[in-house]
Length: 271
Image (tube, rainbow, N blue to C red; front, side, top):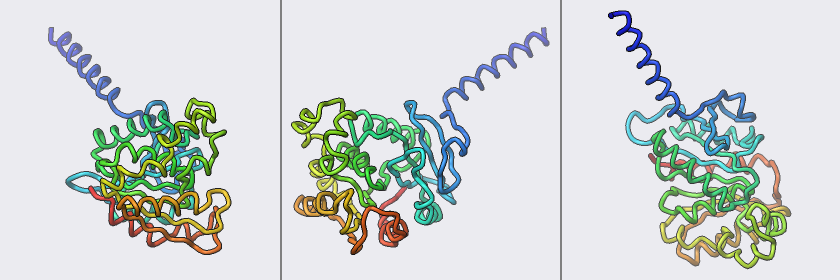
């Protein structure tokens, strides 16, 4: 009887452990998320690969402040981000992101962003107000999500961020991600174009920052960060814009080793 009771007990414990394991995020090794500039972990959210680079020192109490980086793609974030990521993590700020493909800020991409946000805030005790950090077309992804979730954003920082679908990638290319024809997207553009969706962010007093070269041919300053800065100010919002002279859409170190950008993140990423 004792042997049977022990086997039953062990079997029950095994089933319980398996159930608990099934509830955990399916973490995989760092090598499966190629190109991370610092050690981190990766798992799937809604079938999309997400990553977290933990802070050097995690808070003993309270929530973990974090930076939400975009776009997350097979080669992004890359080594160019290492300098600033080191400063974030050293200050107790984690870095995270999720690969939603070339979604250009579409509703489907935004839905996955919401699932990612909920998982990090509910299961990992991350702050409810991350700072969004967008590089190039990551601006479309982060700003469009932020426009619908202004109360969940601690700040927005961009490195030559795309803020205008008409500017990049153009409606012809973006329309497929939105499940529309180019003409349909044009008629609905005001509902999906980040630069047309700033009012709620301004009302929530979300601080914004961008560094954007004045010689950017791919993502022109005037049609993106420059226009957003003017519109945001008109709405009562605050945005700091740094314009390096003679710089384009490049890997110039000044974009990725920007002290002002780091200071902005440190000031607005809170637990």
